[in-house]
Length: 266
Image 1 (cartoon, rainbow, N blue to C red):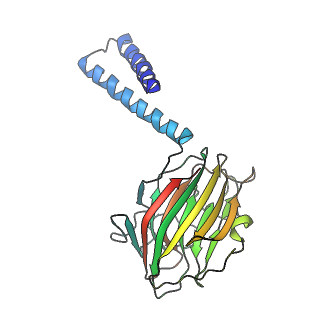
Image 2: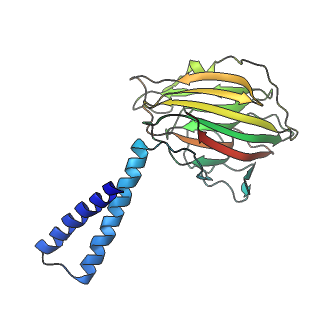
Image 3: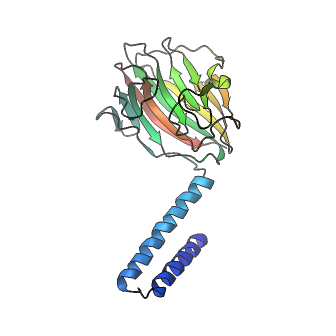
């Protein structure tokens, strides 16, 4: 709080000096001074939160990429996702035509902390189409993100992950073998008949743009791996989290996610 007052005092002092130097001090200029001070203070607070903030819980979610009206619904603490066109508007060499997701606020890559994302998840669909239901994204325009968790056609789960070469396009993606080819620790086959599963994703961020991840289903660890880039690859600018359904092909489904919690656990 003392820092905020100091920032206000410094900002007001500098802006006031500017107006005085040009003999512009009026009732209107006073209002402008206060408005600018508040604006700059808010910017300082946001910047500080991005650099130093490690929230105890991530609770802010919004619809990602303008999903079709009605494709993402919320009732209390339950989200329901149904098929939607991919309205992100960015064309790549891969044709991912279906997207119905929510996205969180961004987490700074400087955050060194552990988080648990958990939810009660169920799928109802007659299709065996592969889809992604959770992502850790860094804002890149191409390549797989640092982490995708895919529900495969055989109803098992897998990690997908790419590194992106620095200053490169979609053709310069390098598979992250630590995640993408991680072998299941337990063979769990899921169902698409509305069966509810307790899904938990544990993430350990090192504050340098890297993380370890473990995936649990009903308390059983299924997969684990690491995202760790080096100087050859584009450094993440931020981490943001996506949840819902993202797939190459359109298909009919109902994905329900109840009681989402995303808490710091260290």
